[in-house]
Image (cartoon, rainbow, N blue to C red; front, side, top):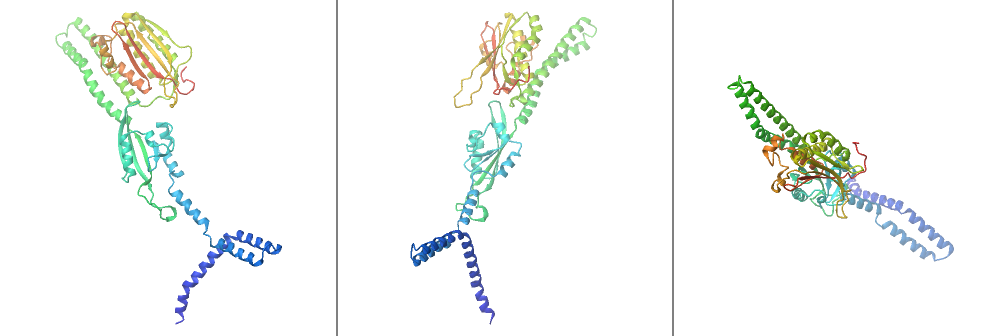
Length: 460
């Protein structure tokens, strides 16, 4: 019988203890306010500025308001936690994690706005400003549609797309949701819960090298089998003749062996050019980082080809600027461009007996809003030979395209020289223009952008 009153009194006892604890906490939080009230009340009574009853009533009102006012610290804490929970900026740990990825990585919010881009993304796509829509840098419709689906609640998406400028390349993107916002920190319910992800992680993988390697293998087999068929048939026919009717004919044997040597050399040149073209295509989307001076390169190439010009009876006239012509480029590849173009002019324009080579500066006209590039260098190689008919000009850089097949084979050409030149210049973000009229020679213009920085050239 004595236990029941005790059990009934237990909740009241706990309530009284909780009330005493809250009162002590309020007194502790408002102690400076209460001390100030006591001081003011004592001063008022002591000086007789107001009746004691009025002073006590005012003190009671202020003390009651101080003790009954809601605590600010818990409210401020809840607001800060809620603000952090719905923040549109990723935490430092998420940024460090994205920086650890070797591939370009973007962190975007549910509106498609970029909130962070790792160093690989900035190197690959240029300076990315947080707060800009991701479509400013990644403009693929397939990627933006996949991003919309993930924002709408779909699972991670994987898409592929290709780009044609400045060079053909293939990219793969993985778009995955990160940390859906279901509630605020501390387990308190969000007043507006949403199933949308808080952030979306967009990672980019460059598939260009793999795709180019696959196409290089297919093209090499197709082109080699087509172009090697004729010299192999010739070699087989001459070997059969030497083993049969011409077995004891020294004159025929000497003649056939010379032709076989020529066909073997043709196959060697063809394979070398195919391999060179494949190597250039494999890295056509990667612009060289080194800087060099075009002036000594042009002078060096002209000196190396002077014996060829003397043999063909052609004079080389060179006009170069007094100062340096600094560009970003690969020295060996640019020398290959110069050799191909100058050698073509010496071979096919020999009847003009003169080849003019010039290097000049040209300004670029760009909108003021864009970063203004320094300009470009234009290398001109002009011969005074028979010229090229207009219908051939658009196709000169195609593989194995020849204006005159017989003349090309007589000059030991493979039909790949200008294709190699085109792909090298594409890698250097440069352009090849060809101008010609029948009977007035041909001009090959290489327009290559000047280097943006003032870094000293690697090549003297």
